[in-house]
Amino acid sequence: MHRAEAIPWLRRAVNRWMSQRISRLAGRRLPDSQCGFRLINAQSLSALGLKTDHFEFESEMLLAFVRAGYQVEFVPIEVIGRGQRSHVHPLADTWRWLRWWRRARLPSGRV
Image: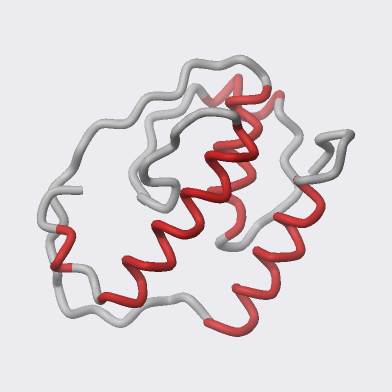
């Protein structure tokens, strides 16, 4: 992330923490799992059978692509702080993500 200081410190810390957790599950470094910019092959995405539909979707999708053997790359982007309020609901979204993460860690790898 270029200009990461434009992101509020708590969101930046959570992003790094989540990226570290997902990197461990994936068995490779995934430096910014929460960036909202994606270039995705729609046919490959539809074949994955993803189950989530909130903010944990980004994590599920990224991990599913890695586990399916698809190429996943990261391109640095510049962060532009716009002073907009986040759409994240801290308690509900954290709880949902932690439930997803717990299931993702199961030996079957099924999310």
